[in-house]
Length: 73
Image (tube, rainbow, N blue to C red; front, top):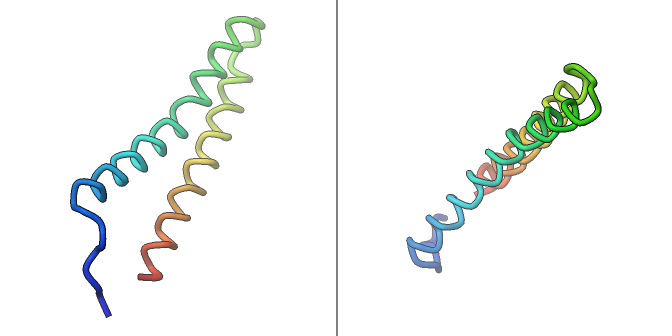
């Protein structure tokens, strides 16, 4: 039973643009922050690697949550 979306197309588009931007930042910011910490602390790639793993995990959890919401429709 697909009912028409009660919101305008513009608001749906803005919501999806926000989701995509958020996921991109979730993947990109932790490794960048880790690289900054590595520079500041002088630890070679340690914080960058931790940031990359953390960013990947958080980004994937968000993607899976969005996919799960879409499968319920």
